[in-house]
Image (cartoon, rainbow, N blue to C red; front, side, top):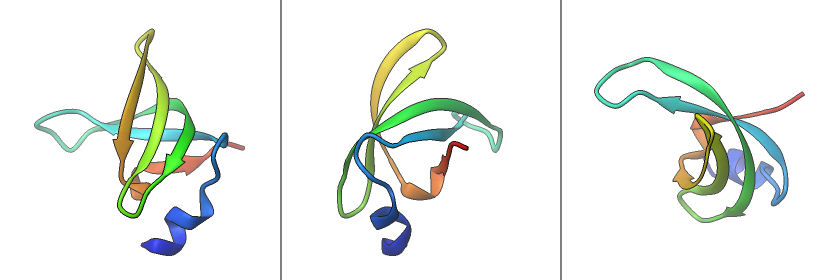
Length: 65
């Protein structure tokens, strides 16, 4: 979904819907967009108190209100 990826901007605050390994359950994690590539979005997220950098599909992100 190229249009979805194009819609995210560097610095934008988003919610990462993190998938639990080995399951279908996801939970929301606050994140910030660092870069947008052809296939992924690079984010910085506070994952259970640890700041992590991840490359995730745009489909796993939602805008924060």
